[in-house]
Image (cartoon, rainbow, N blue to C red):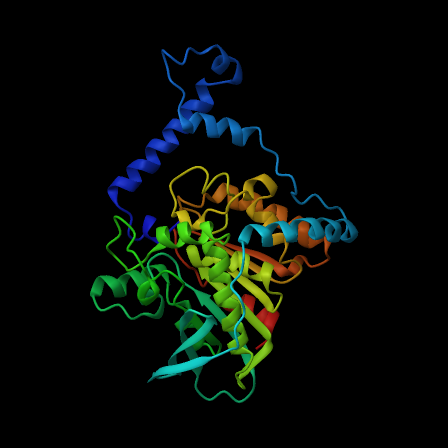
Length: 384
């Protein structure tokens, strides 16, 4: 849903690409009206794909956008749009019996961290860092935590260099660790296609092992999508969490930043066991973000703009609690579009008499996580 490296690991070349794209779009909007385009001689001034796609987007009205005015209309809309999103997420793997291999155990001051492998399909095991706070006296909520394009290392604060550690601190990437320190059980998945699960290395990427391009091409060719497969892995992690004696199976949340925030947006559409969601550095509009500038291909959802926007996808969570986390300086998920989507979601939750279940942390900063509201939001909806 983009990549974390655009901000924290952004190359000069990609910043230049984004700037050129933005300038081209602005010039097109200023000088190329439908009338002048029709009169323009392509031999003298050839048309670009940027101009073509801009016009296509301008003419597109999402077919299944949310416009409900009452609960009955909302339910009717949901019955149409929910199957559309699940279809777009693609074919899911064949279910297999739950198997878990416990591979590693490390003790920290306030929690124990296990590394487990969870079999999510016949030929794939998802690596998961499983954090259990010390001195748990009753069942507690669990949070499935999903990382972005920098891979798992900075998200579990395992960086070896000073720069790695600083990156984790500045962007608050270690939210799985943070929540464990505050008494929540957390499961930080090594997202499919990163770190030890990577296949062919993405071209031009050296800061982490990842194979988003291979994964996307392979997934699309078999009728699936990276976001669908990553959501499937998260669903199997929830299966695992519900077998753990210390986990309250009725209080499971999802949290993700950047690419992980995208998965956190789609996962609750597929799995209503997710009772609360925190989406960071991933919510805006498809039009203003993925469609308007370079992003990682694994975030591209076929056909999605034909049917709805990000706010429509999140509306499928309702009335479950959702916290949107966006840096107002995040260049790849423009804040104006995020505010627009949030306003629409406030209308959705108002129709469902659940206004208190939607909130936003639009903070001063860029493409990163923020804990300004996370703990209060969890306590409000999951209790102490």
